[in-house]
Length: 343
Image 1 (tube, helix red, strand yellow):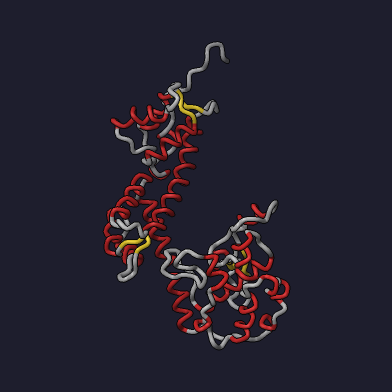
Image 2 (cartoon, rainbow, N blue to C red):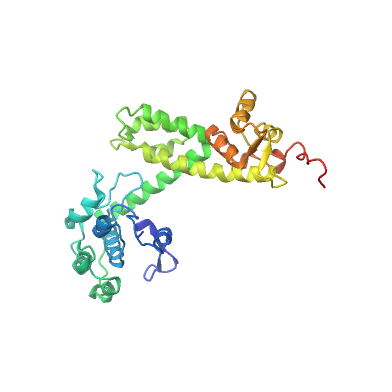
């Protein structure tokens, strides 16, 4: 999945000779057996993959060519969608864009003619005549002494995209730190109520109000809710809820393991009652018995890990690890009773 976020600099001690590396090889695992399927990031996927569901080595040439083009022209896509990649179609027809949309060469630096020739070859839409990775490396540009500066417009685009990305990450972190899972679902509901047409975006003033209600600092709101730029709440809510769900799952897994001392894979209602009354949950006393009944779906007086996690994530009131000081906060009141005759 070649794209800008998946190219990192391994060492930062030399600006003249950096060592770039590719990361995130998750896609390669699924291709070991079949190498089939339209996987990757729309806007970087080559036309032949959209057409037949197959990846070829020359597809990586295409993806890297698009990446180079966007870096040189200051068109690196932003996380919030305010900056789109050159082949990221607004109408959602990514396959059509990969096949037919011409690259905006008027945005490419004019003084980089040799690099342009290279990228024109790398982004040829017909796979059969597109160069293989090894052939790309033989292009004269790699041996040239060209050291042209990026135009001011390209630099502004790259710096602006980086600033937006940093602001977005700060926003996601603050929402995750300040809210429990149920609070984030409430936030998403507020956004949806303000968007009756279901567009996925709201006015920045509306976004600012909702975010302030959910613990986001004024400076972060100022950097992410910009006047005249629609606020993409849908992607934000989806991302922070997914991250919080994953965090809560692992936390709940640890809590369950601490209480399940005998490794039976189930907890008694007494142990769960103690847990729900501990610092690990923001659970009013009136809700405890109702939640216990909801967890024990089969009515056998014990709750399996699956039952526990399902109910706890739906309830969405799990505390943060930092709010639970030590194992004593969740330790059971007493050990599980052993069956008669057991050692």
